[in-house]
Image (cartoon, rainbow, N blue to C red; front, side):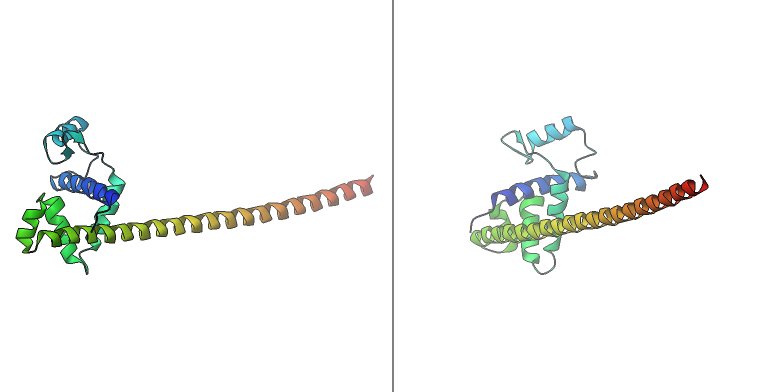
Amino acid sequence: MARIEYIKRRLDNWALWRSRMNDGGLGFKDRNPLAVWAEDVWTRNSYHGASIPHFDQDAEETDQAVQALKLGKGHLYVTLDFYYLKDLGVNECARRMRRAESTVHAQLADADRWIDAWLRALQEEKAAKRVQLVDNAKAQAQARQVRLEAMDAKASAVSMVISAAAKRSL
């Protein structure tokens, strides 16, 4: 089965993020950019010297998706852990998991599809929340407008009473 390219990129980003977090940091933010670049160039964190870009939010969302694999899809979590976090190749993953290499490839593809579905559901949930926030803001604006119109009507009525009283007093 074919892997999903953008999920592979997210998992690469996630692996970098987790490795830096596991080294005692808190992810990407607290690292010296020059040290990060140097580390990327000389380790698995790069492809032939080209540094992989890092995005905290993507890594955090991917981490949530990967952690969600533990419940019910533990074999996919273990595969991702061996392949990305322990930096084992497919051959070594297969040997340690006592599976065929084709099974590891299939599990990586399954994990990609599962994470893709999880991330899509997360995006839909965020979109629904945004719609709800917009609807709430519109309702509040309409209520505010009604209150302002009521206040204008009261002010207009008061001004009519005052002008009528002023005419009588003349």
